[in-house]
Image 1 (cartoon, rainbow, N blue to C red):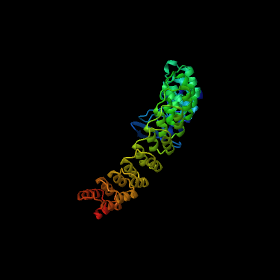
Image 2: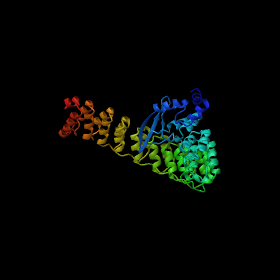
Image 3: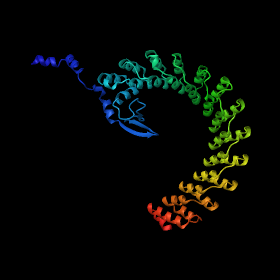
Image 4: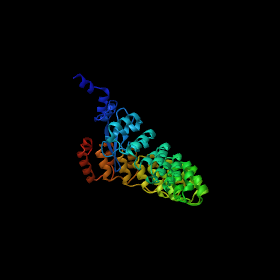
Length: 432
């Protein structure tokens, strides 16, 4: 018996037998325990389903997309991809040995995304390649070493212009150069995104490669306020590929230096959208500049929307300096948003007046001082909607004011009573 026992317990033989057994290495048990403790959370952004992994002890959750995992269900590959995300080579090697089923080619994609070149090389060799997304993921992160590796190892036919576009969008000039030298052509999107995001060095590199296809470039750069790029484009594309959108968008976003440059150096001009947009967004200096130096003017939209957003100085300026005027929407919107000072100014200085929407919305949004002013000084009153809002929310003080209005008929009182009963507003019922 001693001899068979000695053979069975021999260290070398036991290790050999163990290699044929399914299981998990001892030092991977903490990671398995972590996987069991991980919870998932699903949210919906627009029409997209977003699956997030909540990891105990981690600073913040990680989305399934960020880890190159399935976006539809809890993915067992999390164990591997999280180790890749952390750059834990030992854990990845161990998982490769005992759980090879976890290793489709998108494990390489995950390593590319997070700039883990040693892991990219290991996994690429183990799985015999990567997916078509790998190069774009490396380019997005600016991982030039991985981009160079993939370009060397992978067939050129597998790549499109997308990686170069992504690198340009994120301002990674070294990656853009690598990809261009490898024969990957940029699309028009590459230049536009570099202009929009302010990557001057990328714009300078790409512009000579565009073969005249620079449509919208100056418009995009102007909208984002990148004066240095606007100057460069002006110097190198001459009179083409700029439209009125350039000054319109720059004005709407408050980029006075760009507006001034376009006014002095370009001939495309702008439209009424420039001052309308600047007024709506509260850019007083731009409104004043356009008034002083341009002839396009504005529309009633300017004062209406400046009133909506509470831009008092602009409302005053437009009233005293411009002739376009406003509509009833100015006071309606100012009241709805609680801008009492503007409501008072429009009441005193303008003739457009308002509609019942002014008081209705002031009541609905609980702007008490605006409600008091409109009841005291305006004749439009409110619709039954205003009475409903006050009754629903139990605003006795507001309803007491509204009940004094000429529009408070017996029919309205019956509606108010029904609303108060439905929402169990006893104080309102007592008032009636």
